[in-house]
Image (tube, rainbow, N blue to C red; front, side, top):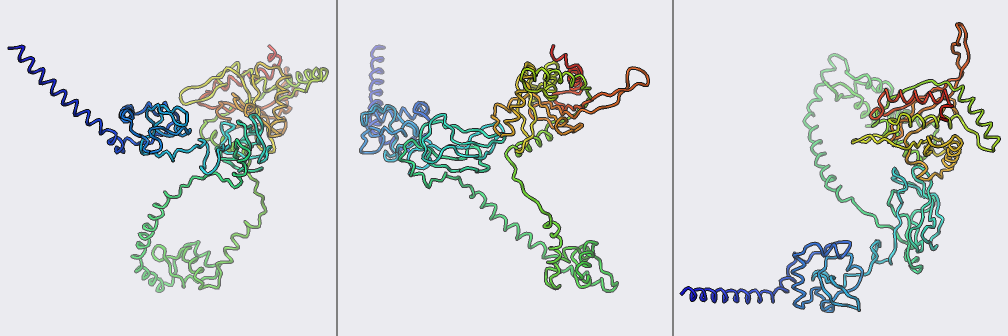
Length: 566
């Protein structure tokens, strides 16, 4: 009996299962139509590669694989019959499903479009082309040649339109915020169009400056080419519409105070006119009787606006025009010349402003005796002349002493960040150089490890490049400390310099002067030369005692220069 029951229920389950499979089979036969009508699946998915496109949406791919398994034309184009075009857009633009059909002799596995995309829309186009009517081309943008650069100028083009260019060839010279840098070509081709010519100013980083093509025959097609500009004026319309509504509200509010002019009628009985001092002065200058003006100020008093309105209304024979002309006459009489700001001046101004606003400066000044230093310099220069070397300056010795002091007190060779203080293990000193184009600060690297002759050579070469505006970014970036000397060349006794961010200190060097100082015996005096130096410190990095310790070490090297040789 139990066996019979078990056979009965097993046969029943088998029949139910078969019915379910038949129902599912008929549903699958209608699946292609469902998939073609399901607009949620027909999605264009932009990607940079087939692998990333097909890896997203596995469930969607499974449905499309079922569609392809039944031999249906997923693309929807009758001419394709399930195949696909072999244009590069297939590998760059849209989501695809697996297929191993071949078209034009090329395998197109995994590249069948959904029904929503027509094969006629797939065109061969370079990814960097900005206009479908133009042949493949490349837009060259203004490069960012320094960390602080936001815009640049074109000094001159070394290539002309139509010239063939190769990788490594110089296309043009770009004036950055710090120097003039050569811009090299990265790809082989032809210079088809120069958007910004010689002398173009204030070109934003990334803005198109030229067009290159691969085929020489395509040059003529870019004769009238203009880069596409993005518009964005639409969002302003809602604000423009809301403005008149506010004006209407303002116009209605002055209407209630109209009845107030009855108050001035109380003035005649007392024969006294109330007016502000400025209104009285303006009325006297233009011979305007105050009794003929109705005041709109507090309690009916006359204010300056009432006098100006009276003059403008024409009740007086045009006295207002001469008064305005007279007020502008002193300004127009001044002769002046507007000098355009160079890129280096703009960047220097912004960096110095940021430095004074964000860095807590404090200043420490000491006087150092330089008698032994000048004596050592004279002896070294005699040796330099004998060997044919260049002379060593006091500034070279100061730079060397500053580097050794930084090595002795490394806390001053640091930089501030919000999370930590970065202490540098190398000593790279920026040297301030004044030029006709502005202030440059080229960097002398590893000063603590170099001899005085090498330091002098580097400083002179960098100063020459700065005056010629030919410094490269590597020659003014990466400094850890700055020295500014206005004493030797200009005779400035003492000054406080602004820190060059992100550094934590800068040394301002004044001139040396002779002073009378007490001698060793009572009542004895002698002459000595003293030089004032001021250390500007970032108090977030260098505490007062640390700054004083650094100045003590620096003064020791200056007053005993032979210790710099140890």
